Image (cartoon, rainbow, N blue to C red; front, side, top):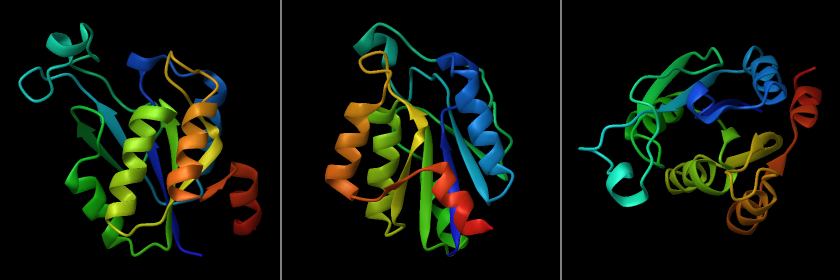
Length: 158
């Protein structure tokens, strides 16, 4: 099965746990991978005005990827979706930070683009509302149905 990995916002700003970074790095070394990095630009997305906080203005992905796309706000940029479309994959494996917000937003963008989003349930962490990610996993399952684990993906690559 042709598949690619989308790494959502695994960057210093959001203090990802080391186990998450290590797990994503191991998988990204075996698949085509792209990453998003969320940066603050109040003129594009008014985080400070509306929420009273904002991500860093400068940051970088903690996981090496074939391509990195800067975004402002929750959703993925059209350029990232277009890049994945050009790979002609059967599904996009999604992992990263804030399962019930940015990761879920990535799922909607991928779904709307016909890219078969599949959540890696063991390589995602929720927001401060639910660090376990269970809420986001439940929402993902409800909307997109497709979930898997890194071990299940690696077993298909062998």
